[in-house]
Length: 228
Image (cartoon, rainbow, N blue to C red):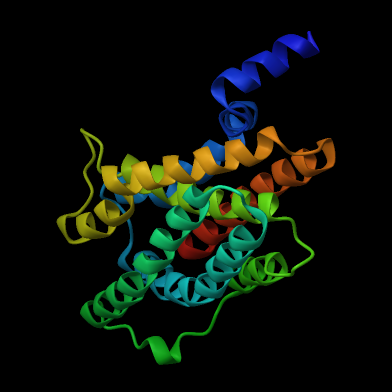
């Protein structure tokens, strides 16, 4: 039976096998009540503004984390694709921060006065811990992919046919839900799968635990945005 499972993992990729294995908790993140309220047009403006302000703070902490993943890739990867894909993601973060500033201005949010809430603090502390040189590249790369993948799938859900996302929020949803960002996430996922093929059992366990940790932090971030 174990051989059949391993054959299936090799066929579809370890990351996809994990997502299927942990589908309920993954969907709790990608189809969270906060995301559903955006999709069905019932989201409260204060909830969206909380998410926008807190995510701006998160992205600022996300930048050094991605830089640390890039450094690990340069040192540990023997595949140039790793560096190119990660560098592409990092280059887009400057535009992302500018976008958050424009949106905050549009919604009347003074970003200099925003204080990180506990869920945000906890998530940023996790990112900081992953920047340690002792953290394996495969584990850090898994976290990077998972963070991007949850956002992509969540916001893609909000622009699917039949959604009632408010017009003023469509740009936000299309920013992460668009096909181009989806392809970028698939490129990251492919990099992770390539690393996992060479990983030890211990590395595999750590990477899977990290995936689950990211999902849980994403759920808490959405909860915070709803005011829970």
